[in-house]
Image 1 (cartoon, rainbow, N blue to C red):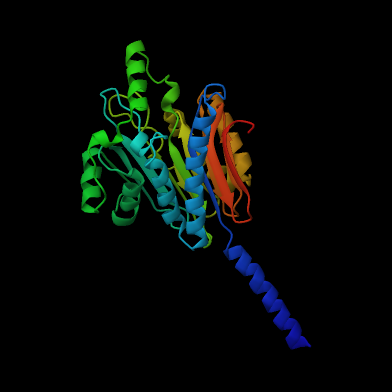
Image 2 (image 1 turned 90 degrees about the horizontal axis):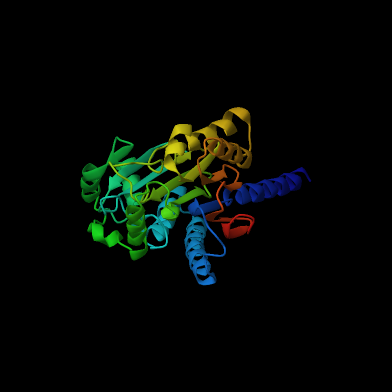
Length: 325
């Protein structure tokens, strides 16, 4: 009788541990900003949601197959980098000088290792370069020509700067130049990011962007800065941000969320909301996505919309654009 009871207990515990081991979650964003349901037609909405869904489905399949959070973050962001819909990779915005300069970063929650590139003009997928910096260098961030040279040595795909050209982004630059405005363009949305909890219990986050339309002087925002635009810690959560980077840098936005969870015992949602409130107090705008070590998801923003979505191992799924959607 005792043996039978012990056997049943072991089966029960094995089932629970198996369920825990298979727990996973993935959350993505494609930028936050001023968006209008009236100005975005149904065709455009469907196109954005289809691409977000494509990225999520790829991520989910990889997670089901046992892929690491790091692999999933890179592959999912690649989907969005290769799409002209977002301000990352192919759809990157233009600088004041009419070129495309891209930034990206990635961080692992288990090792707290990280990598980033900034101001690169010829790396097809900057998130791949950020990972190479993390895995195959003693550094955290490389920039400009040096980052490109490193990427070449790692065998990454190098493309001419014209690869990143899209007419929509070019016309956005022309509009700003015509009206002699800076940092007020409504078409700066589109930075992409991904945060993942894998079936091994590890977290990872990554962010990729083309920056800000009409940026000058080699401006770099929060996206490639660990602790500002990207952060991951297995004790707390994985975070990717999107918005007006200067404010995220000043706040140490992503790291602050993790710190509030670690030292104040806040939930991932409450910590993200509190940090967004701080952003609003500074008159900054943007959003954040995060997943904690238990698979809880947060998607917070103070703009009229944020391209976003998530999938969890329990079947929960959401893809949305506007607030209250």
